[in-house]
Length: 234
Image 1: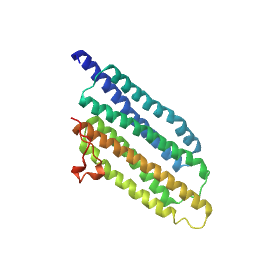
Image 2: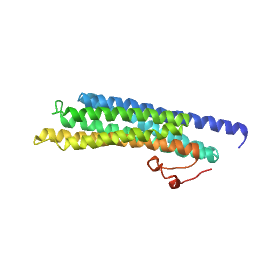
Image 3: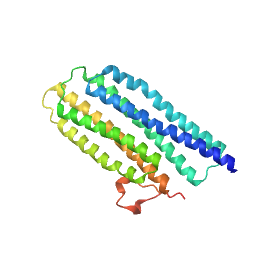
Image 4: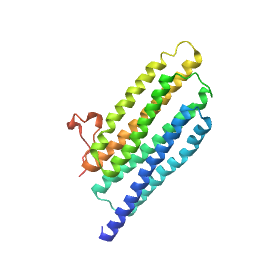
């Protein structure tokens, strides 16, 4: 590839990366609104979260089409292919994170405007969501900096989300005989599950960060077993 064409290719790829990472900013905003909708039983805000997901979906399609168009016009080398593969995976995770916000927002009207709230569950939902917001911001930072250590730290945060998810499940099972309380508890279990998936998506993006840097793909949960590393791209 001529030097000038190569420079133009790198500039276009960098612009696509920036667009993809901006998608994570959209997710952070969606998560914050979703949390407010759940904590305050704000049905109108929940409706906004659902409608605004079109922007996140649009960003996913925009970046994906841009990458496919760039590859059709240019011949990327192996290191470029690593970044391209990682960006396609990143944008897919961004789209899924947005979908989880929609899933939660759709649950808000189902419990009514004054549900029988159990404060212990709601407090854990709050902590889970704030942890997921932190993870989402951190996975963006890790990818943009190509910081593998920061990416691997996402697992530690995800463990906290998993622990809170288990606690919510346990508390929901103790809702007693009141039907409304049981239904609210079951709904919060679904909310917690969606938040847990957002954390998993953030870890996936962290794994792609390591792939871009090292050319090796491995799941961070298997980090103590380096022999599991696979998909080597030089």
